[in-house]
Amino acid sequence: MCDKIDFKKIETIEMKFLNKYYHFLKFAEDEMLLGFKTKEKIKDDWFRYYKSGISDFAVGAERIVYALLNGKGIGQPNSAPVGSDLFFEVEDAFIHIDLKTVQTDNIGDYAKSIFVGINQNSYTGYMEVKGKENRLYNSSLPTYYNKGTTQEKICLTYFVTILYEKENLDILVISIMCMPNGELEKHYKTRVLKAGKNPDKTRFNFSNVPNFEFLDNKKRIKVIYFAEKKCSNYKKLDFYRELYHGQNES
Image 1 (cartoon, one colour):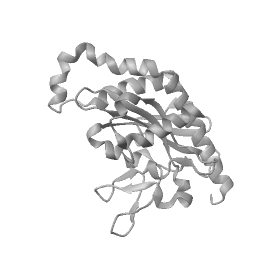
Image 2: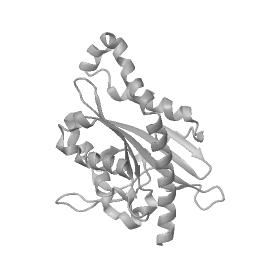
Image 3: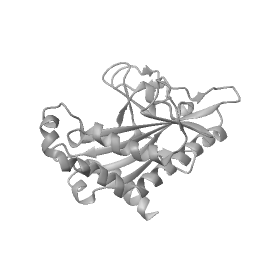
Image 4: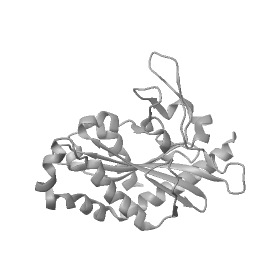
């Protein structure tokens, strides 16, 4: 797959499901936010464990988001042991979806890139490493499942990201983004990946590739929820602020 028409075909299906999941989660925004608040009813029974590091906000948030997505009934869940937390097969694709939660303590990372596991993406390629030679990163997912057969279907990767305040667990931003399929490495090259701390670790450098470049630069990232008043305290959230207002104006 080396010509633009094939790249455009890949991005068309990537955008198709990005829009599907965005519109569903936006429609279910009230239910999602209400679900996040249910923890308050029993806060006295769990908060002391959270503060001691035993519990993690991500665990509770995953229950809410995944319950909504599973309840929508998009496709057939797949039981493969390698893949994302949510893994569906639909008529024209296999879809991986993971949730990423970040505290405001790490807002700098949230504004530019997110950690991704090798079982969560198909983008094998080189990462730029500051002051060093580019580092090769090998993902575990194929660009196509059953490639070269009549059962061939593209592999798609999406991340739902949540930024929250550590002290009170208030949510500031919820977004959904599409990481490029590995076939697009021929175009995007090293721009998609950012080197992690260890040789086999990487981050999706989404701020460097925010658009579907073969689809008139339509956005690869959509903001589902943006707490404008609280987010005004964080200059580093301008990236999400511009996306959010741009969506509402278009």
